[in-house]
Length: 230
Ligand code: DX5
Ligand code: ZN
Image 1 (cartoon, rainbow, N blue to C red):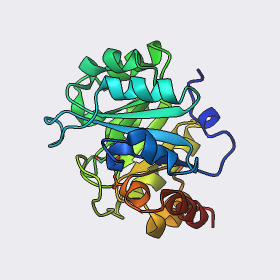
Image 2 (cartoon, protein in one colour):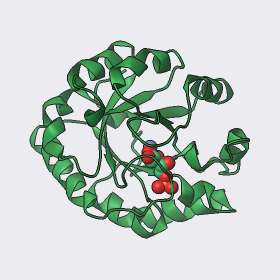
Image 3 (cartoon, rainbow, N blue to C red):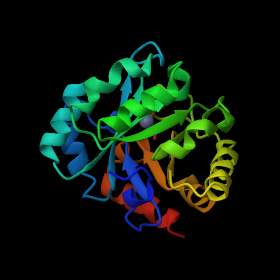
Image 4 (cartoon, rainbow, N blue to C red):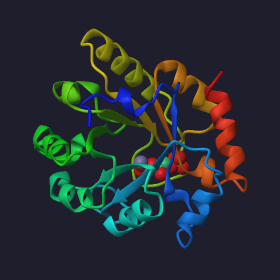
């Protein structure tokens, strides 16, 4: 595993990561199949009813995804507190990336080191109300920054366009310091904002309801790709 994130992008202009939070909870694999393979990563939202006001998936879901899709890139976004207490239990499910929230731990550097030491790409996330400054000290040792464009907890919320400023700040910081982390945006992403996100420097687009909430998930994913590819 390389420490940088650019090897994960495989030369693509951007990556699309459908969030299974909006998939059919009784048939997650069927929902994934309905995308017709029009995705790069599978995004799994883990919620604890404490850091965020909702409950979602635990390690068995990630294990089952890994068993069904051995070659898929599994992107696990943990919205749990304290984040460090949940790393090992997800590491054994063999995800490619674990992204934890800077707001959900008093020991962000230690928690990210733990992820890296387990051979998994470490990612750090910030909520809409958190400044990029908070994570600057760890940006040289991570693979990805996840910028939340809604307050975390639920799918189907409205995109907050002001987060584009944070994406641009991160792009500048990355260039000045010659770093390689990827920038992922999550929440309210869809056809209407995909082009702005990619032109601002976003590398990974997470989309839940825009893909799984559409009766034709494959076409919805293709439309997002087309918009973002402009
Ligand atoms: C929100 C989650 C998101 C969510 C996105 O807390 O982190 O990944 O599934 O859903 P949409 O795309 O519907 O906003
Ligand atoms: Zn997420």
